[in-house]
Structure formats: structure tokens, C-alpha cells
Image 1: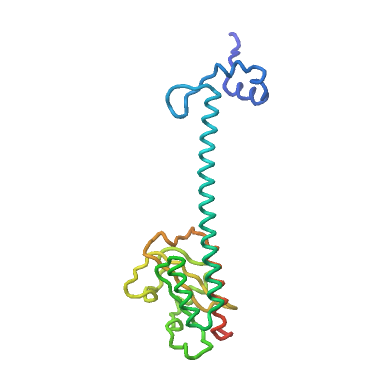
Image 2: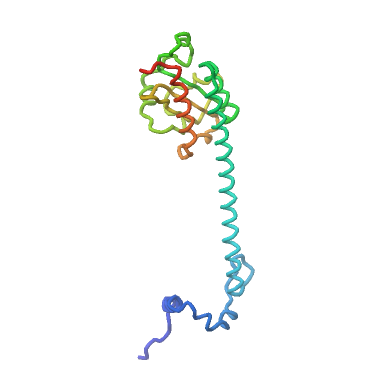
Length: 226
């Protein structure tokens, strides 16, 4: 039986990898190579096929770059809003202005349809004791909030929150941020009827910053042992 001297595809692939300059020594072979077009319509030369592949890669890279630029612009816009909120809260002269500015900024700057705030702390000014913000919360909500290590984003977490946003509100997604000093003393809640507005995989950077900012500002209005 005569030996089979036919090269396999693996043999040819191995040879070309081991001899990367093979086509430099035999450029005439490239001229006669034709491959199916990636976009249909018959065959194209190897050089044309490579050009088409490069164009496809460039289109993909351009799309990714446009996406990165869009994300960058969105992040810059959010950063500016957080900065404005910071300046506003720092300039607040009393508790009423602080809380009104906070809710107003969430509604108007951040386009959050519903926002609510509850504090289970003792106000420094006893005149605020009857404010709804200092109204009692049940043990379940308090314990749940104290267990948060990061803002919660997603559907209703099984807590009674609708009364925070008014009778006509029917939110389907929530962003809930624990407010902390030495320990947790309150909860900032944001909500939307859009079930995709707040979702578990969304970025937490700015929510964390808002929580830290609001927490630091509110410490001036509650007793230190809260």
C-alpha cells in the first residue's frame, strides 16, 4: 500500500503558522486566492476579504466608541447634578429648606417621580417632632434598612412604602438608600412607575454619593446618639 502523502488542513495550518513569511516569498499565490464574500454576492480576492473584515472591525469599534462617549456624557451630566445638590444642601439654612431642596432636586434634576424620607432619630429641634419625616416606622422596615450594605434597586422589596409617595402613586421600581452616621438612622426612598427605572444591575456610584451627602447633612438636625 502506498503511503498517503496528502496534507491535512491541520498540517497546512501548522506550516503557515511556523512560516509567517511564506506569502512574502510567494506573493503570486495571494493574487489567485478567492474567498466567499462575507456580505454575499459571490467571491472576492483575499485582499478584498481582508479589507471587508477590517471595515467590519472598524464599524464595531466606532459603535463601541460612540457608546463610551454617550456613557461619559451621561456620567458628566449626573456628576453636575450631584454637585449642584451638594452646593444646595450645604447652603440650606434650616431643616425645612434642606428637606424641601432635596426632594425638589430629586424630582426636577434627577427626574425621579417619587421621593420620600423617613428618620427614626430624635430631632435637635423639638418643633420638628411632628414632621412626617420623623414619624415612626415599623420594626420590619427599620431592621431591613439597617441590613443594607449598598443601595437597594429593583422591584418592591416587600415593605409598605406607598404611603410615602401620596395616594395616587403606584411605583413599580425602587431605589432605597440607608442613611448612616455611626449607625443607620433613616431611609431615603426613590420610586418610579417605570419598572425598568431602578434595576438590580444598575450602577450604584452616584446613589452611594447621594446617600453619603444626605446622611452627612442630616446629622446637623438630629441628636448625636441617634
